[in-house]
Image 1 (cartoon, helix red, strand yellow):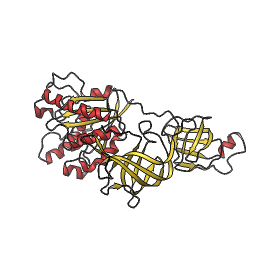
Image 2: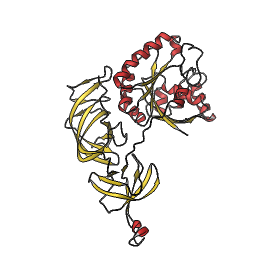
Image 3: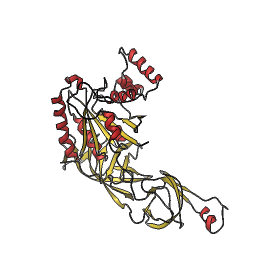
Image 4: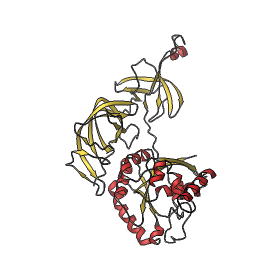
Length: 417
């Protein structure tokens, strides 16, 4: 069955967890024991019925604080399509988790409280979604019941978001008025919106085209080198293949085939594929020639090879209390290789509210986004992020604590006006 991945995003208390709980409940995706547990917790807190936000707020700390901290993944299916939902945090402190959840999503559902309209986190999450290559946004104007299902208020918010989307370069936006609490326009149409002729949220998610993210050019980051078993064969044919090394990993693009000419990067040596085993994405291949290939290398199409150079210019979402400045020493993990690197230039910093880049910025602080150049100890083979998410992205690691402190997108482009 066709799979769609989508992330929910927005400010605190805009109703993301409740929306997902409503989707799961109304599509009959919740088991009876889950419903019973949610009902018991709701009653213990003095509430009535089901607090559907508890379906995704699974951590004890989240339930106690009433906010989403971690990314909660949920799965459900309808007769038309299967789904993976990433319920991402709204609090600014946990923006890093939002990046994690949205990085693998095809669609971002940006929730907005109809009473408050767009807020700073709405802008930040929309900007991050655009940088992460999500070309389809759903503007879910939630809590419409609290503004008496006002058509004028809905159109006011959608007009403001249209300006934001245009600045971000996102052309596919579906605005939907809804109420996650009672389910209006979530799965079934609401009787309170006779003025709205569009689909419910579920209907829209079931019918929109799944973005094609398959990269046509072979990219196999080597994760494991499997040495031949001694004495396993002779000097030709199957015996010769048995004495060759296998190179295993998860495909980041393309489909390997026997006879394909490939290049091993960053060394640049060439060969042809002699054998292939496994099914995408996990495969292993043998080459016709004995080459010096190790974990962290990339086996790629020889005719359509990625760029290899020690300077990475990327849009970076910074996730650490310690600012990123020129001269900062870090580790960069790209595909299966981790290398030492230094930030050489902080080019600009994005104002997430105005979407104007501050070209005088000299550092990125927690939850800020900007353009940075890194000099890596070893050249890395990269594709533009919008062409290949895996080969165009990397994470930044603190070399002392080994904590993830940033996420980078190579050639993602600017979202500033």
